[in-house]
Image (cartoon, rainbow, N blue to C red):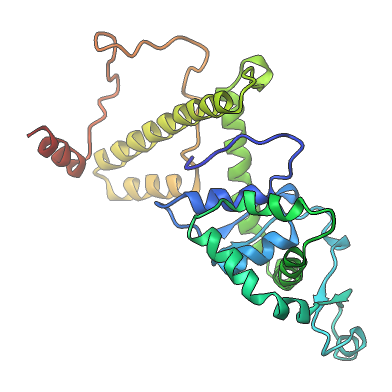
Length: 281
């Protein structure tokens, strides 16, 4: 759980998707999936320029519009025998006109000078759609159309997206399990206090996931039968470490030195143990 933030339930989460991806400096993501609430054509365009493949699960996909370049009209594709035809055209002149501004916008996000969510809010604050927003939207229509066609045509691609989103749903259930009190609502009124509460929840989730990793690693290392060991590895690979059914979340925990005990004999990996020994010296 590398990143989380607190936003209003009235806000669309699409702009915050990029914040999460840019926050993680350890595990570099190359593809990101989300549901319909986390998707927009502008996000498609910015994601492409940032080097991420955006693969959302879009509700009512058949109602989505496809776009082509103005060089070929709808009849051209129909004459070519295409079954799926474009509904509109990309305004390429708008993209060309604001290309320098688009690059500066993306560079600002890439250099982490300003969060993407703040930049999107600023563009959305105008009474009329900002020209840069319109240009990003036109650029995103290209990536969106390409994505929809690949989604329709490639079974493995659809399965990979569904699998990724199942993991996200499991993570959401994990959060609800940890924050089981007060109907999973924040009691804190201030934004800073809400972020502290969310940070504590994330710390608990990460502690459980870390324990799962250590436990599974130990079980694999202790298995000397190569066939069984490979079976364990494949089971872990096919499953998920985001599991909490074995944790008692409805109780009190005493983390004092007297009470803190290791009941399963977890050991620190050799490299980490060596580093800890050097730090002690």
